[in-house]
Image: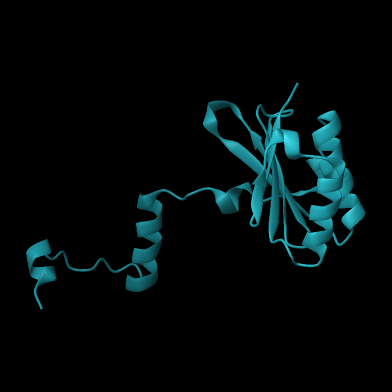
Length: 143
């Protein structure tokens, strides 16, 4: 049987502490901004999903693990506390992943760009494609 951990900015709940009442309470606290986030994490991925989380009131996200150590992350925004509660209960009680095919794919915004690509973009911004003069590091460090 899958075991879970629930984490919020106010505390962490072990599997034996997780109840229907806890989810009702936490979703209510999220809607009142008494809690900033809630993450429900299984000990083993559910249909490839490493976790289901909700931020604020209510940005729901899940991360799907893919071969090679990568991931896809999906996000869904709603103002319906009952919908959020239903998603979390389905994930926790029945191992059901929300239908992410209608969710926004935010994977690209979370992946780290390569350092080379980042420096190249910065060089273009600051030097407008003119290569700066190469200066030895000792000279660059002098006041």
